Image (cartoon, rainbow, N blue to C red; front, side, top):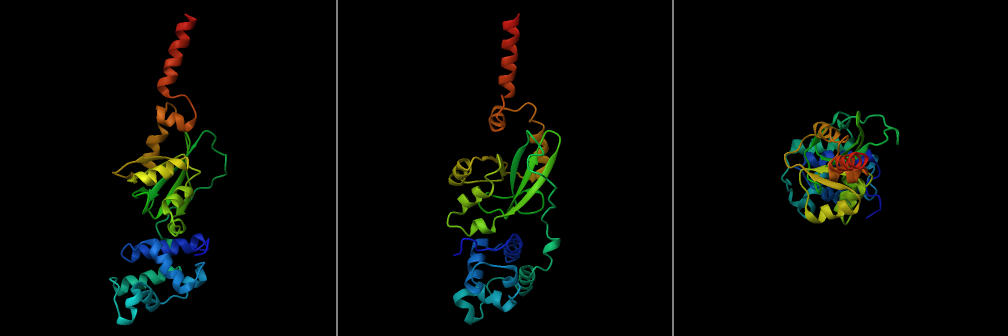
Length: 243
């Protein structure tokens, strides 16, 4: 397999949306099957050549000659092909990214969210379709990137690749994450936080934002500042020494 099995973010987005339409087909499996048909790297031009019959054959694999229906209805196959062609992709639920210049928010945190739909925390670390990446400051929250996981999932160690995808972040929120995956995230310098109930990403960030001025120990360590409890202790000690 090529070092870059998917040639562009646009191609990756098409594949991710098509996989969702195909009864939540594993993206890595779809990438592998498409590469067998189209060769690597997968480009927008190559994806646009696929037909519904091509996709049925790809999904049926060794059973294609038997007219296998691959467990996906005809309308879903058609919709998946339209997405692979790029039709309707502009109207997908990927949220718009805010304008951002690196370094414009000093003292802010970079936070990732495991997501599948819109601006929601609704994904497992190892299976989410994308990571939403936000810059969170005391007064401003900006969505600075939406990173699909298609290329990461084509790697031999997808959890390590997913960790590398967000290694510029200090925190990643997930609904769930396994122990081995969490170890790889920590090794990448990212602090994983589980919120099983999920929720709106911006609501979670507003909660985080409210703690920046008086951070608990775990957050203070990430920010590189004294924790709120330690700061109060130091203030009391200074007052005692000056009395």
